Length: 271
Ligand code: FES
Ligand code: FES
Image (tube, rainbow, N blue to C red):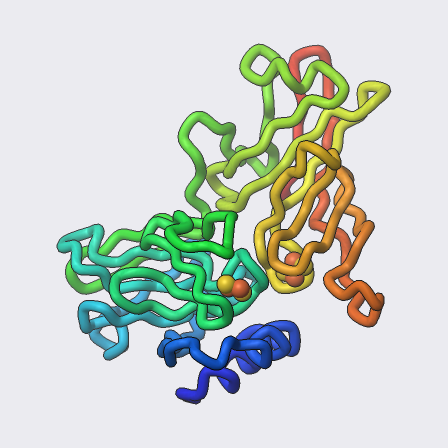
């Protein structure tokens, strides 16, 4: 496993991060990258790690970058807390410009321009503005379980491959321009649902197709913006601006969900 910062950055997320690493400030401290660990999801959407097998996780202050097929890389941190909260898990890609994060002095730190994040993903030092995505994790003293399917309380969950948004609970979807966003239980990632003109609906996933940073809704422009390299997407998920102004890098649309409505609400088909 490489201990070189620039080598690590290139290896984890490709040329984009390598270019960012090339612009590291000369005076930046040598922040140790979290070593990479590959794992597979169980059928219930969890990843289970036997902590004793990974020296970087057994020691307090240690961390790994967890790669799971189809998911954004995660930073798994062994904090000073005890018990089930001993481990915290957040997305491993800095929301400023897409560099992979390290863990030092109890915070996630970006080696590129030194943004810092709490172990809950909140920004504690700019230039990053957007928080990291936080993941549910529990530890029983032996096994660490990371839940990729956990949802937000009060947000509809996936039932038989569908999510239903009743108008009685989500009246904003009855007006063109209305929007609902949240993390459904059973899907585990932020989604957006938009009420369009003419009674149509659009629903998209939040993971940018460039390097999996989460996009957010830009009120002023009325579209979705990726904070990592400024890609933009319409409410229907189509790309209007890629990560490279020269157009040399092309990316695909956001993942789209079929959305239908009746007199009672809006239904998304997730699978
Ligand atoms: S990429 Fe700039 S602070 Fe992380
Ligand atoms: S991750 Fe690069 S533009 Fe979104």
